[in-house]
Length: 318
Image (cartoon, rainbow, N blue to C red; front, side):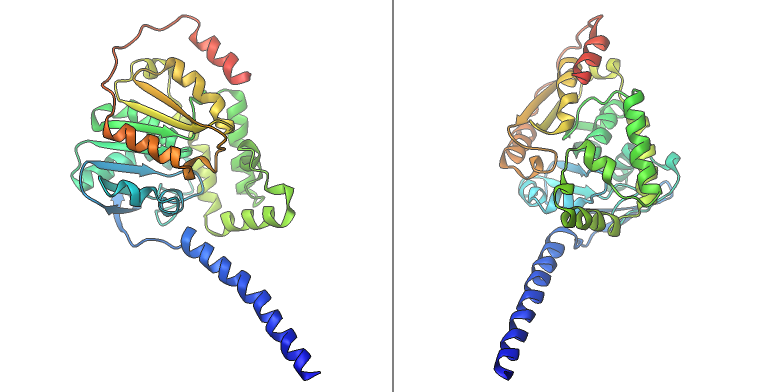
């Protein structure tokens, strides 16, 4: 009997410790932070890492993530740092950076953080790569400070017009976070079906909630409207620009209209990739490396087509 209890105890210990070990490994590879530095960005402390040598590349992560989770975990920082000076920041409201709860502290202040970081590091011009929310920040940055960019790669996103539907979506996401209800509206928009398995859904929401200040994220979401870019600004763009997006990413529906309007812009599809998996696909990194190695020269500005706004509205609604 004692022997049976001993065997049962060993099995039970294995059952408990193996998942805990796997969870620990998952945490270490996805949530443990790389030692970095801070600087003051107009009153908000911004955390960043700086590694490698060469032409500077600044990486801007997505909503509810951080620089390590978005860029280091998929191996992008280490890959690019072989040939470039790679600087990855935690956006305000995220990670180890300051977390204001006022929506007025976000919006255009987020691309300005990148310029302030460049000034802090003495960098005159840089390549900037963003993903998801970081893509919207990067696109806005290219229209606000084109003279400071060598190239821009707003990826995992498209040309998001701030219409009534998008305003309503922003309010739903922000309200859910403010009310402690989690990330459901955001996951639904991105077609991340964690609800197919209730435990996974709860765990995913728990991880995002426990590793973020949800009131700061809600404020950042409410500031998203300021990141809208006009058709005129896209048509006048003179910054070499690349968008890489998964072919089954729900945000890809807005990438096509941007390709039709934006000047000096290239669009690359990663076939079969969604919003989460695209950044981990080798095709994503390969497209970035090819673009950084030889960014195309700016194209002459093309005159606007009269029906462009209507065409964009039809494409977005399709």
